[in-house]
Structures are given as C-alpha cells and as structure tokens.
Image 1 (cartoon, rainbow, N blue to C red):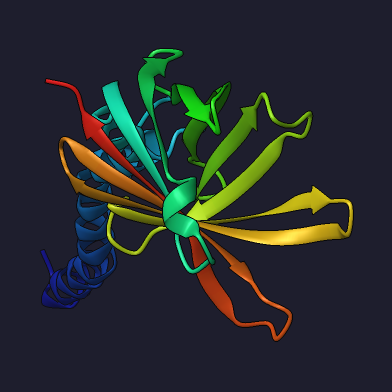
Image 2 (tube, helix red, strand yellow):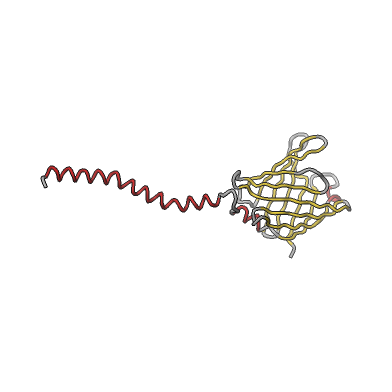
Length: 201
C-alpha cells in the first residue's frame, strides 16, 4: 500500500476515534443513568405511594387525645380528652382519622383525612366534625422529612374568613402533637389549642 494512502487511512481512523469515542462513552453513561432516573421517576409517581406516604402510614393505630387550650383566660377549664382511631386507607395512600371526644359534656365526633400529594410536593389534609357543617382543607410543607409539617388553610366564621395554621410534630413512634395557631387583631400569631396523641398499649 502506498505510504500516502496509508497515511490518509491512519488520519481517518484517528479522526473517527476522536468522534466516536466520546459519543460511545456518553452513550454508556446515559445507559447507566437510566435505571436511576427510572427509579426517581417511579418514586415521584402521581398514583403510587412513596416514602412520604410510608412515613404517614406508621402513624396508624389507636390513641388517646388530650386537648388543651392555651393562651386564653380560663384555658385549663376548657381542656378535654378523647380517643382517635387512625387507619391507612386506599393501599397506604392516605390516613383516615376518626375522633371521639366529650366537649363540655357533649359527644363530638370528627373525621380527618391526611395525605401527601406527589405532584404538588405538599402535604394535604381535610378536617370535619359534628360541631360544624364546614370542610376545612389544609396544605402543608415539611423541612425535616415529615416529622414536622406546617399546614395552612382558612376557616369561616360569622365575621368572615379566618386564616388557620396547624403544626403537626411527630415526637416518637407513639406520640404526636397538633398545635393550632391564629392571628390576633394586631396580626401576631399565637397558639390557641394543642392536642397530644398517645398511642394505646
């Protein structure tokens, strides 16, 4: 083979390797990344429970409730107790909470639904009880993996719309606390009710 042709083939082969080599390496990296991307996509599925739902599901069980009013005159006299049954429903997608309390000598029943929306990346809750015909809808966020969730929503009274802030703190596997906050006329937020849940043994 003439030297000139051999030199051309050598240069052509080198040029091809310069183009194909990095492309091949990139293709291999993309193939390796595909399972991880698929796994992340599966975890963020809008229809399948993920780690947030699994954390909430651990709260399922039966509890006693101690409800205290704070920051109000005569708050001690308004404290009451009750029970709560929390169940994981719809294949672990949501928690359903059924409350039975005695408030000022009268039975009060409540029904709540808790969940985490994989699309909006927010915690969501719906609260109802027999002392009202209103449905309270709350959305929340957490900075510690769901151990503390701050929910916000609006309640409606005869005076109009009233913003509500509810903080749920998981103390341990057997205790969690729900604290309700509202703003006074000056716009300063303060706690007015705290409910401590203790798992029945």
